[in-house]
Length: 173
Image (cartoon, rainbow, N blue to C red; front, side):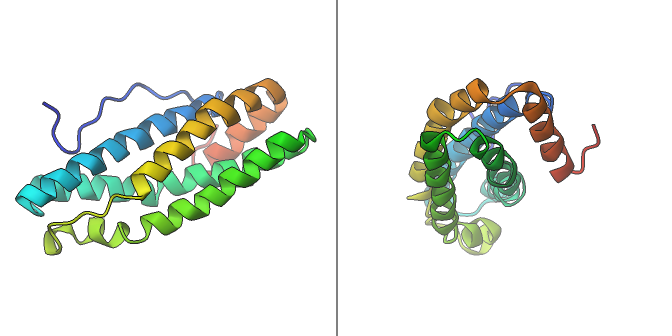
């Protein structure tokens, strides 16, 4: 049986495969969404015990740091690369996805303070609509955005994307 904060995770691609890295990030986000579902059920039964606190801290840390980098990767670096190709449908998709990023931020807002203060606020962990919105958003990126980006971006663009993603994380490549 999986504990609250556990998730199965494969090794992630490197910055030389930035689209693969974005897809791997989606797998990690899904793992954290699953943790949130388990955490909400656990907190209703046991409150903010030590297991819940550890799980809440991991999820909060991930979404506060890596989740933010992920959105920046897409908005600051991937979107401009895709826009240069002049594909109106792809540009419209990116616009929609970036609008969804703002909706995700609004949906996360009531959850974030609960995750930070779980020991003091056991009981209800408001995971909806955040988890549902996030899962739908990732599905759109995985099935529409990433395959199209793979089709249109060339090696120099992918290398530039990988370098920008690495720099955002303070990684020298």
